[in-house]
Length: 279
Ligand code: FAD
Image (cartoon, rainbow, N blue to C red; front, side):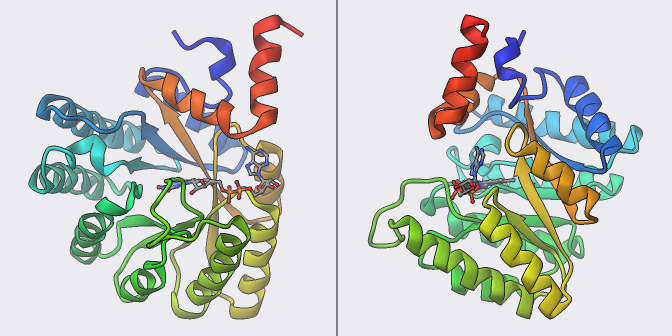
């Protein structure tokens, strides 16, 4: 069982737990992006099992009539084993999700996976007429070109700052530079995309810039934030008629994810400490 301190960031160990958490989110006007925790499988059995779990999850989402979609990591469904394993499993998931009318996001991992991830999403976006979306990272120097390519592909694109420690030859290292590039890329998306813009950030500066661009260009957009992070802001935005999607991790591999959340921010570490000592 997940200890209460991890419940802030993870919606339980089972799909049932994630579905009932998403039901409560929906009551607050927020949609759910359900993510089964798991990555970097080196055995086909693990990758296939997680792909099967996503297929069962999209049926649960449809049966419960949830405002929810799924988000999948390439290395979770076989990319470390081989490109063809990843493609096979992603095809199976997208087929099932498309049948059920459930949207599929593909998370972006480190730079060695960018090409194969984008190639798969471009193919499937066209095949499903836009029922697939992908994340791109502002810290990578290649991202303006990738956005240009994605502008003509049906589907959504989530812009994030980038979570991976990439070589300086291909990425921006300075936080202020990544912020500047993030703003430039957002503006490009609002100007060039008809819809399907997802702002994947907790940063109040980026969120208000997105609103300003929306007012200027009229392009629709959605905000995506993580479970347990700035949830008051998520509710305020939803109350203000902004489309808000919360990324909701679940599953028995919760420890590493929880540990990352605690490490990335002093306030999260204090929260965990207070929960342990009971103050
Ligand atoms: P930061 O630049 O970290 O912080 C800027 C400001 O935001 C802070 O000063 C503070 O005001 C506010 N803030 C940030 N975090 C917190 C917090 N925990 N509590 C309170 N205030 C906070 N990365 C990938 O590489 N690939 C992915 O597929 C991917 N998917 C993502 C999906 C979603 C829905 C989200 C939200 C992020 C995803 N990321 C992904 C992570 C992303 O790349 C960033 O590492 C992460 O979001 C931190 O950047 P930020 O823009 O939120 O804010």
